[in-house]
Length: 161
Image 1 (cartoon, helix red, strand yellow):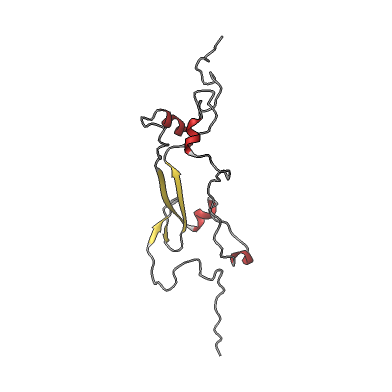
Image 2 (tube, helix red, strand yellow):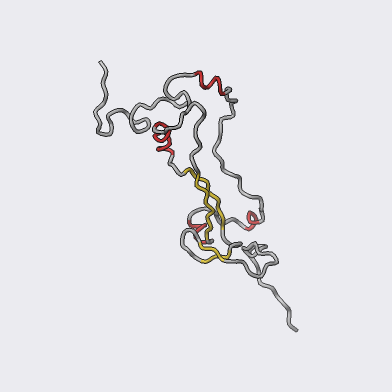
């Protein structure tokens, strides 16, 4: 008599999120362009500034818009990245977990930039301050490239007697 044995499965969902759907369209891996079913791909949503942080100060200084009314919002780059399993493991987007840890289905914590918990003074008090960096609260830069010593990039240092 035949006994029906089922193969062992590593994950409860077989590594997919397809429940009840027969077919899911394929997407291309961002890294290697491999065809991966959309429900199987590892998705990562990235929000970045279009302008790198080193150039933000240069743009604000050269800006035509007045800084008194508040800083203008620099545009951001929104991208949804799809990775195949092998690229996600290789680029450390996900890691392999033990059998007991695989049962943990809680989503990973969101990594957002930490903000100061101290309460900010009202806007009218911020504008009363004067001096370099008063609008941003940043210290004054000592050189031409965001804090580098004056004259360290081949330009003659300005000396005052």
